[in-house]
Length: 157
Image (cartoon, rainbow, N blue to C red; front, side, top):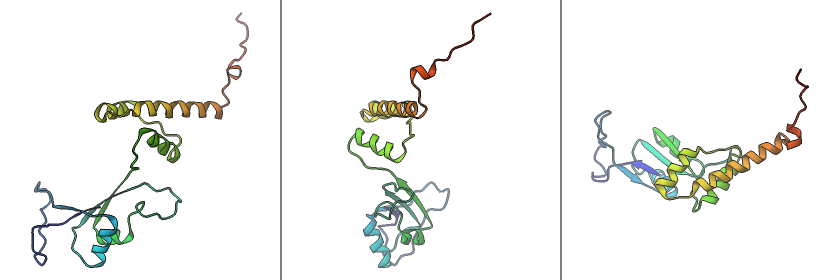
């Protein structure tokens, strides 16, 4: 969790915030979810905005810590930006997670190649596996057998 807070001012000094359009960035402080919740419950001072980073949640999934922004945070901060992503160590796990969340997913090949170039990953291979699996699923779903695709045309006159 990131919250704006000035660390170089006395605790009782009024908060100074850069005026909109001034180009100055407000100071940022990082907290874990539990640490920030404790700070807020104790009346600790934090800024007006929050960037909350956590795992995505399923639509009807139970409330699991780290998958939702706590109500306390929504009540305290003017605005909350939620960034959700799975933290995985290997590309295969990322592909499985994506397919379990969104089976019809087909990541853009150019974007995936860019990730490979920039990050040195092998996501293009995983993406190709996702693509091949989705094509096979569609083939089965549509019952596309070679003999089903052939049709007899009337003779030309």
